[in-house]
Length: 294
Image (cartoon, rainbow, N blue to C red; front, side, top):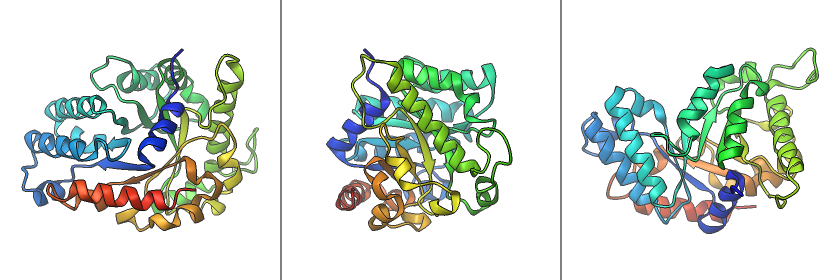
């Protein structure tokens, strides 16, 4: 039986803690590292980050956009970085934020989640602007292959607040905010998966997660902390720590009983340490996150 992504993520938490290292080769970071803003520079940056993360954390998250801007050469580097990370025992979340309907969104999922595909990762970020129901094909593929999805719900950027906190006026989700409806729909997907397979032992986490930014005040979105931790909990990918302002000691305050299921994402606060300091930065910040695990 295929081991689900939620179970693999739980094992990574137990072995290495909850810090996720973002691999975001901004142009200014490449310059700080003494690297050219070219495919060659991306390769050096990405592989050094993988080497520093291996054995210290369980998860890395390459931001696809910074590779994509270099075209085919950038994608070739991304393939190499993802493969190196997975070979080193790291779970890889492709931060691709894809979304569409029908065969188009299915093709996005095939690109990132199909075993043996050039860009094969362990999970991907995905958008549900067309509704969580539009993600049926990616969800099915993730479940069939032991992969995961992280659906955007309440993000860290202030431009999103009005839309994500808007209240639905009719239909089955009437009275809920957009963000809360996504959280509830994802929770239902995880429950249905666990209920449907009598052979599967109860999991602490489902394989379909949500993105909840650490700088978003979840109460203002109508998202209940108890709801987040209901088993099988939807794993939470939490950007916003470090450079964006949230502090690791706020983890219990921000996520309450769901804190043990939060993947704490940090990138610039780690990458800014440079090639000689990144390994120490990862170890220090991973230990800091572990202090505040719920």
